[in-house]
Image 1 (cartoon, rainbow, N blue to C red):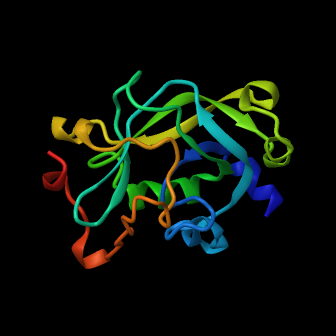
Image 2: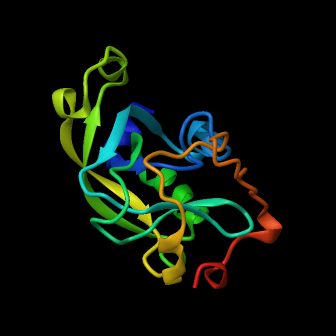
Length: 172
């Protein structure tokens, strides 16, 4: 396994929705047959973005509209190219979501649990983030969240279904 990392460089990825631990699609990251992924810590965007839940499938979307919405919380992983390709397939990159590299504050989960803030313990890192670059402007009228949980107080349960996947027509 270790020698494979030399053949396949690691990619740093920030996840904010259904790929986080405890969320419906996290199994994809946990499954070693999909490639290598290592949890590094919690992340927070350094720029505000609109994180909305939309379509009849209740999908969390991070809209590519800087300086609107909230600083968004998520998780940061290092992963190999095989795992990144699996995420690209799930996110339908680049036809639906697009992956952009952004600066993120990375903080150890234990430091944040001890009451410290991202500003106190975070360090800047570059990470890939999946954004929805093209969307219906009315999505900006939706409630915007700082963090996503499928079991959140919004009551909007994610509905993942391979046969019934969301399409660009749902958000344009």
